[in-house]
Structure formats: C-alpha cells, structure tokens
Length: 432
Image (cartoon, rainbow, N blue to C red; front, side):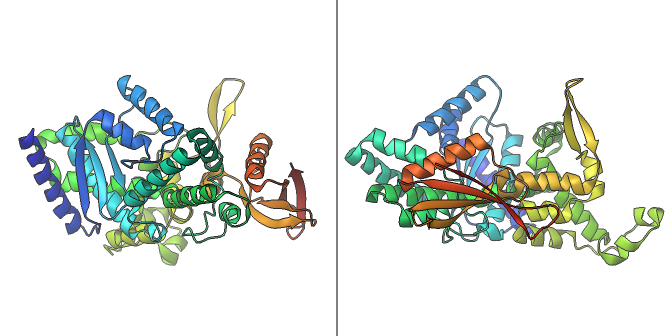
C-alpha cells in the first residue's frame, strides 16, 4: 500500500511539473486517496469534509451510494476551490484513471485561481464551512434541532434568489434584503447570512460549468497524450476519455461542448481563421485551406479561460461550423411517433435556446422593488421577463416561503416588453 501511495505521489509531482510547463498556474494542490464510501460522503457535502447537519446531505449520500453499488455511476475525483486546493482520488481507480484525474484536477485548479468569476470567492472555504457547521450545530442545541432544520429548509428553498450578475456576496439581492429588513431572530439572521455566503461561493461553479469542465478535459487530454501515457495505456485512455465526452442527441455534455470549443478556438487562432479578412472571404475552397500560421491558439484559450463565463463563451465562440460538427440543433418532441426531431438548424436559434437555459440557470430573474407597497408593509417583488416565464405553482411556493420570513403580504409582478412597443411594459401581479 505504501509503495502504491509513493508511486502515486511521484506521478502527481511529475504531472504537476508538466502542467506548469504548459503554463497552468494553480494554488498548492493537496491530494487525498480515499475509498468509495468516503468519497460519496464528501460528494454529498458538496465536496467538503464537513457541513452543517441537514437531511438533504443524507439523501444525496444515499443516492450516490446506491448509484455506485448498482454500477450506475462512479465519482472519479472531487476538487475544491480553496487555497490550497484539495482533491480526492478514489483508491480503486486504475493507474490510467489516476493519471487522467490528476491532470484533470490541475486544469480545474488553474481555472479556479484565474477565471475572473472566481476572483471574489472565499479561498479558505474549507475552514469557513467547518465554522458554519459548528455554529449551526450550536443553534440546534439551543433552539431545537427540528426548529433549526425547518428554518434551513426555508432558506435553502430560496437560495437561488441571489444576484447572478453580482461577482461577490456584497450585492443587494432578495436574501440580503431579508437579512437586513425581515423580523428575524438573531440565530435565524446569522443562519441566513451563512447560507447566502455559501450560495455565492458555489455561484461561479454554476456559471462556468461548461468552461471549467472543458478546460480540465482539454488539459488532461493534452498532458496525457503528449506526456503521461505509456504505450500500454493508450487503449484504456481512449476508452475512458471517450466515455467522459460521450453525448446523447439533444443533450449537452459540458465536458464535450467545452473541450470542443477550446480546441476550435486554438485551431482558429493558430491558423488565423478569425477577424474581418477571414469573415469577408467568399471563396469556400480558399477558406478551407486558410492558414496564416499565427500560432496564437494557446495564448488565446488562456485569455478566454480568464475572462469569460458560459454565457459569453458560447455566445462568442460557438460557431455554425461547430454546431454542425457537434450536431447541435433545435429539437422538439414529436407526439405522433414518440421521438425527438430536429426542427431548426439555424445557429442563432440554437445558441439562443442554449443561452436561455444558461442565463440565471434558466430561472426567472426576481428582485425587490418596494418594501412598503401602497403604504401597507407589502413586499413587492418584480420578475423581469427576459424570455423565461414564471411557473405559477413554483412562483406561488416561492412567495409563500418569502412570506414566512417577511411575516407580511408578499406580492409579485412581472414586467415584460410588448412586441409592438418595446418601451411599453406589461404587468401581471400575484400576491399572498
């Protein structure tokens, strides 16, 4: 066992040197080798060794454990955005898997450190999560476990009401408003502050899922094929790598979409297939062999990984050629024959549909408008309609939960531009 650990440690250090040689820049990364049970426990806690007590973590653990037991899913690695970064390797992984995972982890760690949307995240979050867990356990002892857990249920059902456009937890969102203005007991206020902080910590991971997984996949592929693989490893690597990138028609695999966009950017900036001259060239055969030999591909993808999130990444770099290559079309369900069919191949429509699903994670954008509406202490919330409709049942449940914290009537209105007159707003209201 010690010999195997030493070999794995040596392998990690070698891959770290290769990663740095390519220009990856990351915090110190600490790897821990653990079994499947322990890995599922940490995964249930969102990647952290300890969290506050709550039933949802047990539910996630049960699902992960059964999935692993029945051979339906397997977690190969976990890595935490922290300084130092912590990563967990499953001790039953093959050596090829460990090579893939270690290189993949260094890609993630580089992304965590350098992407601008992670710039404001708490870099000592392992310690912070442990502090949150300790304080919430104390509240349970003082005020009753059921009372505290019920309040946590309420807060977690509203944790998506943060502001995705604010890069840090200093923004003024619905949760911050309730923290400042709602008639909460002190322990409730402190609990809501902690859970809001955690929501902001996880926010950039949701905003950059495609970019982050694509970046890590790009580098594990590059490091292994150019440096780490031995001849005996090639077949296993090809099998495992292709499984990671496998995509079903009509579905999005963030690993596959991300790595393909990075590869396309690298090729285009190496050959000069971008800019006004290239776009205005109408000679298809000439464009097919276009190569300015600029060699700026790696420089460009490093720049992209720093400045973009999934929405801007896809909006700017998902080309019509790449859509065709990846079979990214607009699909619709045909009730007559019970299958999904292509209904549109237009790149703009494909991107619009994908962007709608990514903007605010496909959820309605809701903000506080007034806290004393009509002078009656009514909390007025506004849904800014940018193409995402409200689901009435979910909207009703959200209003009920906000009202439990606000303790007075809560009203929701929707503002939507009309097709004929964009400056004219149409309003619909619902209240409790």
